[in-house]
Image (cartoon, rainbow, N blue to C red):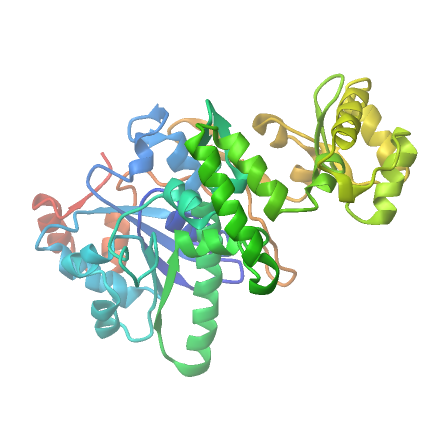
Length: 421
C-alpha cells in the first residue's frame, strides 16, 4: 500500500482491462493512491501479450505497475457482495465496460452511489455515454478514424492508412481520466458528495485533434465544399490515402510549407534529427546555419519550394546528427535527437527527470518502462513497484474488506474469487 505522494490515503478499485482506464490507475498509483485492480479469472487481456512467465506479459507489466491485484468473477452470484464491499472501501472506482454491462455486473454508478455516496465513479465508454453508439464497444483505432485526427497523423501502406501507435487516445484518455478523478475528489472535499465522471476515447481524440479538427464558418465553408468534391473525385479515380491527404492539406491546411522545412525530422549521415522552429526569428537562424535561401512560404505549393525542401534534405544527409545538433543549438535553433524506442529509455534527459524507470519483477526480473510524467514539490511521487501477479493480493484485500477466513475460503471454493497459484 502506498505511504507517500499527493494521493496518499486515497483508495482506488479498478474494474477495467487493456489500456485506457488502467493507465489512469497507473497514474493515480504513481501519485500515491492504493490501486486494487480487479481481473477476471483468466486475467486482463494484456496478460495475453508477449509472454515473460506464466500469466505475465510485456503489455500488462508496463501498463499496471504499482497496483495490487485480485481476481473476481463478476458473472458469479457471489460477486455482488465483494463488489459492494470494494465500493464501500474505495474513494474512487475506475470502470471500463460497455454501458450495457455495467448494471448486469452491478458496477454501475446507480448501484455504487447507494453503497457509497462519497464515491467518485469514473465511467469510461469508447464513444461517450450518449448518442446512437453509446453502447457500442470500441478501441483506439476506431476513434482515430472517427475523430478525423487519424486522417492527419496516420502513416500509410499501399494507399491505405495504418493506425498510429502508440495508442495515443487510449493513453490520453488515461491522463484525462486521472484529471477528472482528482477534480471530482476536490469537489468531494468541498461538498462531501461523490459523483460519476465520464471519459471516452472519442472525447479524448477530439480534444487531442484540436489544432486540426475545427471549422470556421466564415473562412472554411467554400474550401470545405470544394475539398469534398475534389476528394470524391480522387477516390473515384482510385487515388490512395497519401494523395487524398495531400489534396486535403493543400486546401484546408495552408501554411504547411513551414512544416515541410522548419518543423520536421531529417535524415542525417548517421540517423535522424528533429528540428522545430516556426517563428520568423528562428526561421532566420535555420537559414544562417544551413545557408539555404529564404523561401516565400505563400508559394509553398510550387516546384521551386519543392526543390528547396529537396535541397534541405540532401544537406542534412551530409553531416551527423550530433554535428547538426551542435550547429543548430549554437544559434539557439530548437532541435534534438530522433530515437528508436529502446534508445529513448537511456536518453540522459529522460533519465534525469525520471521519465523512464527500472522495475524489478519477481517473476521475470528487471524491466524498464515510463515513469511519472509530472511531479510535485510538496510530496514525492511513489516509486513504482512491479505489476501484480494474477490474484496476487486476493487474500490480502479480502481480509481488508472484512471477509472472514471461512467466508474467503467459501468464495474461493465457489470460484467467485481466485488467489495466486
